[in-house]
Image 1 (tube, rainbow, N blue to C red):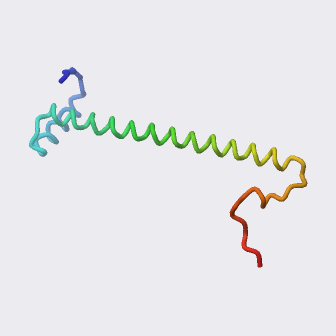
Image 2 (image 1 turned 60 degrees about the horizontal axis):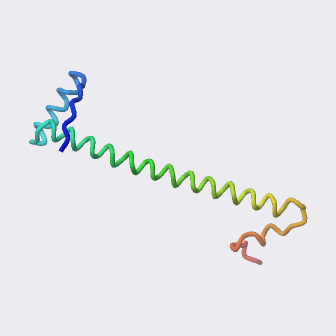
Image 3 (image 1 turned 180 degrees about the vertical axis):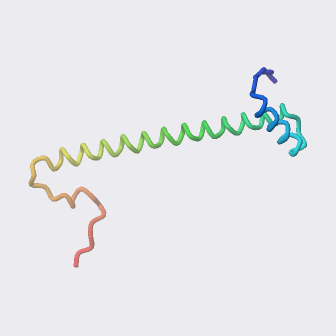
Length: 88
C-alpha cells in the first residue's frame, strides 16, 4: 500500500471526520473509499465519452455516404435503408 499526504480545508475535514464516525471507519479508510469510487466513475465516464465519439463518427460517415449516394439527385433514398415505410 502507498501512503499519500493531502491537505484539505477545515470544513471539509470536519465533514469527513463526522462521516467516518457515522460509518464507524477511520477517516483514512473513508478517503480511500471516496477516491476509489470517484476513480471508478471517472473511468466509466471516459468509456462513455469514447463510445459517444464512436457513434458521432459513425453518423458522420453515414451522412457522408448518403450525401455521395444522393448527389446526382436521381436516387431512391428508400433503397438506402432496410427499414422502409409500410406500403398501403
